[in-house]
Length: 155
Image 1 (cartoon, rainbow, N blue to C red):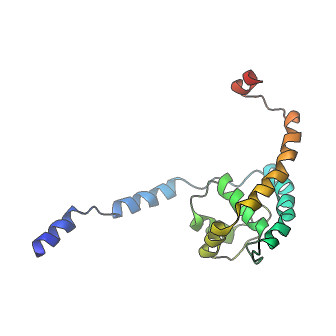
Image 2: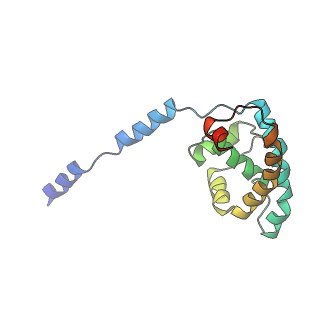
Image 3: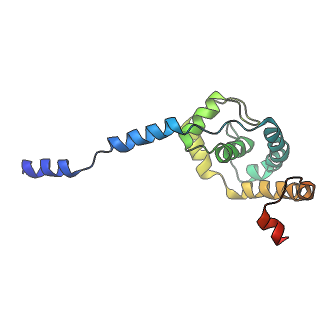
């Protein structure tokens, strides 16, 4: 019986190698740098008022407004996308160490961010998107960057 147990233990693969590979990857792949000043100001100018405009909907859905309010959560989602943050743990570290977009340094837990992201209604983010979209569409004709060949051909 003991020989069978030792035999199955020998056949199981160790997860140490996988853990070391993840640690090595985290050392090599540093998070993206902070957004340029102009981009950060533009995001704040476009998105922050739209997030504030959704506060009434936020209250109607009976969501609590403590540290992780709707504007803070929108900023965290934008940062996760812009800086390609790999997980909630890394996001928590960033929030606790740096002032990001329109949010100051916050002392929040990983569990709080995770729970708020899991329960954040998509309707709120949809409302923010629909508030920002007309402004982006109005600015599209004033764009001065050259178009990619595929889009130029399609037009």
